[in-house]
Length: 397
Image 1 (cartoon, rainbow, N blue to C red):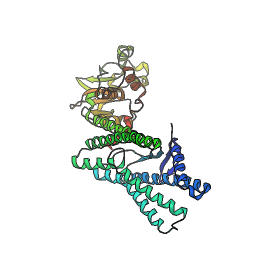
Image 2: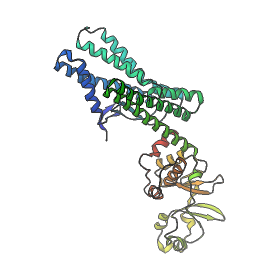
Image 3: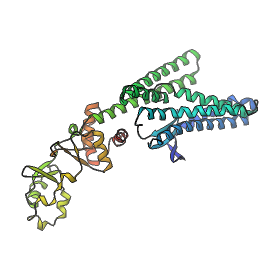
């Protein structure tokens, strides 16, 4: 289901997941039942106000993360309120463990600040008034939100804090994420088990189910963190030489355009990538589009050398360039492919998105057919759920 944009805050787009309305309804019902001594009208009015203030608190919590990230020059794509609270879509990782800790702790600090603010407000409102009861509940809720989020396991803020701590100790961000994700998986499975125990021992079906759902959400997202980190590691470990192909032809730069056209362009099985050589040295790439710009009457008298694009002026990377950097170059310059150069400056191969995805599929045991690879090569788009452009950008900027 697609989230609905409801506005923006500090330039950050705000979205509502359709499932959020389920929680809004449940929260309204819960609060109205707690305030039923005030009468039906006041109880339900207070219930909806409290439910909205609850999610306002969640929104401010996520805004804390977002503004901390923006202070480090990191783009925040959106904040979304959904079934289990809220989430800030932060585009990339902080550069150091200390900065990662600052982003992670910012949300709980906002919740603690709200707890203190509402606690002080409670002391200046009439003790028996509905407002006092509501403010007291808001204080408690924000304290619970802060403490719950500090549980040390991804995807919770405490997991991000744990990640920053392990990163600081080991110097390895990827290992830190794996550790924090493992902690999140353990906590998630524990919550699922606890939910079933609650159902069995107390017959509180809704409470037990909700605990189990939270556990499922934790496991699901911890697994996502783990898989994403493995993918990021692989993008940095794999090099252009690992995925490049030699799906090109080497042709004589001294031959006429007519001879080149007759010898190669009529061959439908020939690759459409050509590099011209002269005296055993690569001169550059031949573009078929450039050939078409030359009048056919001149094809007999002009050589390939006259339309060659020198290697120094075509998009290229070294064999030792990581996949992450190759992907960034493909995306930033809107290229269909890139030439891979050897340490000696000669053409070692070419690489495109299909080559990259095929190599990743082999390394990570992803399901990918030859038809999938060919489609990626032709339309230049990555498979759904494998947004390599965004992932590569997050680990190289």
